[in-house]
Length: 466
Image 1 (cartoon, helix red, strand yellow):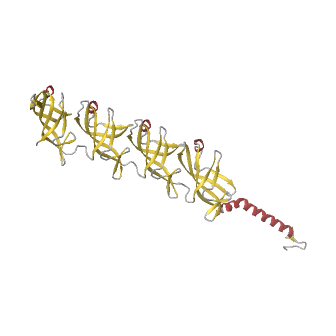
Image 2 (cartoon, rainbow, N blue to C red):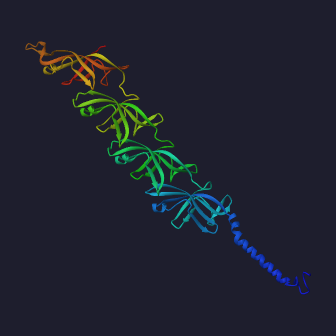
Image 3 (cartoon, rainbow, N blue to C red):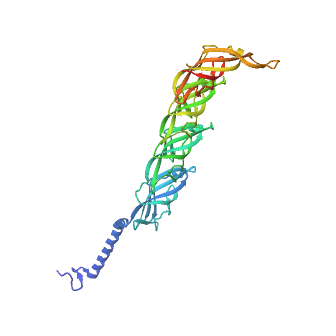
């Protein structure tokens, strides 16, 4: 059978020209189908992706609550944005938002063309979804699709009202739009001269991220001295960064504190008393020694305290005060408050070794009725301890120098004034620098005060025996 007949028909049926036309139509149809069904894959294979960090600034809470990872924004054509990570931090009574986003666009060297322009630091990108519309500046380009997050432990120092300090407890969370951005893990509170305020040191775990080698909490670069604001549900901390990467380094530091208080307060001080500030324990009374003063309504006390201090290397801090000799400590318990200078650090006791010494005392020009009240066996006690005991009393008239009518000078007894010599046994402390009695060094010529119950005497030291 002939392929073409004399009239040019293919196999005797179809004209060759018509057959070529059909083949051309089929070729066009196949090409169109390939474009429709397979061309999009080719287009997508020509696109590239990268990641950016966007600073959206402060946003109202209602808007922040609508933002979520996975939100997308398409400009059409070859550009699309997908939110992959969100970081929130408080700022000026609002919420600062930093996001990580994946961008899709035409390749451009090692980056892409997004929305018809290359990506540059500081460029502003819009995000519009069915629920919100925001814009943010590019702060970082490239790397992964998540912010370089980590939980950072810091210590913040702040001065707050006493009521706020009482509310602060470990476990408190700071939340923004339902996301936890900080957690309180420890609190130390200390007294201030202003009774309505307290100094607090708060250990906090912050949700931070690293950008260009800097650890950040929102817009705040974490550096010592910077201020971080944390609005918890019951209080707000505006604290200065004291430590970064470490928490409260608590220590117990023993000190000996001296104070002069009224007799009622002196009677209430006892071993085991706990000093608290706004419900936070700050010190415990370990030892108490009470001495009489020249005022029967006042007592001198030496209190051994174990302070809850914060360690800064070799330095111990108690509130705003560096723990060292001479600095003043203030404590508050359920039944009393007192303050006084630190006399010793690292110990609870006075200097020296306890001993008993025979000490001779002398008083001159004492009225007769007063001299007659001093008796052998009288004592001064500090709680259950005898610190002074009179073992002997010698009374003799005081002498006066009188001039006679003839001009003669005579030494005669005073009619009602007496000189009194006391032999006493005193509880003292032997030190390398001398003998101490009731916290003071005594030597010949020193003055001591004894509270003998019914009478207080002030006498001069004549001699100190063994």
